[in-house]
Picture (cartoon, rainbow over the protein chains, first blue to last red):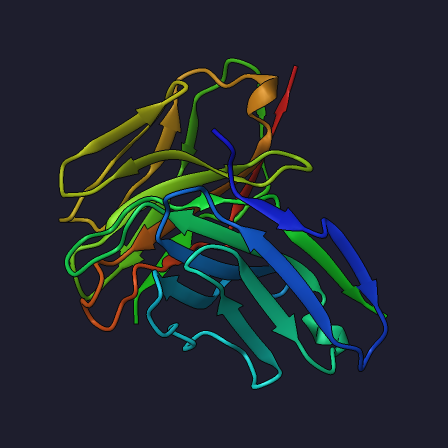
Amino acid sequence: GAGVSQSPSNKVTEKGKDVELRCDPISGHTALYWYRQSLGQGLEFLIYFQGNSAPDKSGLPSDRFSAERTGGSVSTLTIQRTQQEDSAVYLCASSPRQGRGLSYEQYFGPGTRLTVT
Amino acid sequence: GDSVTQMEGPVTLSEEAFLTINCTYTATGYPSLFWYVQYPGEGLQLLLKATKADDKGSNKGFEATYRKETTSFHLEKGSVQVSDSAVYFCALSDRVNYGGSQGNLIFGKGTKLSVKP
């Protein structure tokens, strides 16, 4: 079946602009994660959604970052007033289910490479 | 907090050589352990996993054993090929609601492997 898809694959934006990154998880996967991959910081967890529950935002680096998930499926990560340090590859992953005492492997999309000039 | 430490690269081997990439972890709960691989220009792919102590994960000739006593999950392959050239990431995912975990992955910094013909 189809894997996790992300769009756009590449995004170049000017400092101070807002950007939206989209993630389509694998159909039926209720858990969705956003990560950021950068040279200096490696792979960092940003935000987690489980179904329609309120997201865990504990990994977001600043209040310029926000995310939403509509209908328990598609997710959008928004970065407001972008800064050069936001340049990175933003990865989305989905997982079949997460629950107390359980952990499942995550399937990653190809990522969106964001360059802030 | 939870963390993963893996050997720094780059690692350069000749084809058919034996590969070991060391990985150790610290965790407060009962983590699952993973190796992910990122081939040049591609996204993260799950290579193998182990969910409890003494489990051995294996795939494509790669193996790793979950060693709770040494908190390790070293990746091995008996005979590497040029096509194995990639970046390898060790990761853990603690069980949901253990130590505040939301099941997010915590990654090591990655080890770049280059295999020469």
